[in-house]
Amino acid sequence: MDNFKVPYPYKGQHHCEVVVLFCMDHRYARLVQDFIYKRFDVDRFDPIAVAGGAKTVNDSEDLVDRCFGVSRNLHEVKTIVIVNHSDCGAYGGRKKFATVSEEDDFHYQELNKAKAIMCQKFSDKEIIAVFARLNEEETELEFIEI
Ligand SMILES: [Zn+2]
Image (cartoon, rainbow, N blue to C red; front, side):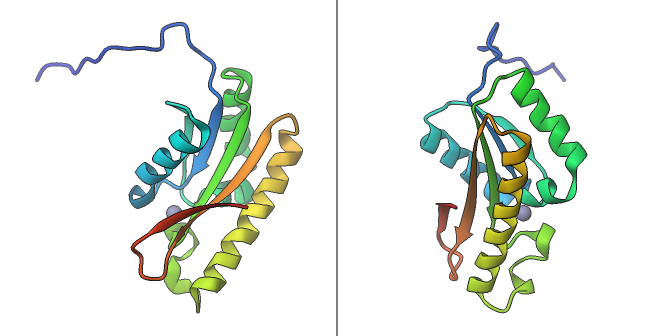
């Protein structure tokens, strides 16, 4: 099998406007990516895809420091985005909650907690927390900035 080659368009370009921490869940990754492109009018971002999104900020300081440190120091990002989503397996999924409203409230709390931690660590950056909310029928995803 031949090696796979593609043109590389980023020679000499190290700056990046946005770093995004989001869940690795394949059902949401592409949709989150599309949201980021449109919302921030960028064609690329530093992706940090880990199970649970904000859960990583709240549970694992080392990982956060390592990943966001590169984005801040090497790529000079201006904005840090943290995304959680409905029915996240890292939190036990939608079935863990009695109602969708209860699930929403839980993720808002997680995101607010993570946002507060990130505001302390990276006080010179804009921190934006986003909840990718799946409606009850699981037919539409809404990106809510909290
Ligand atoms: Zn998830």
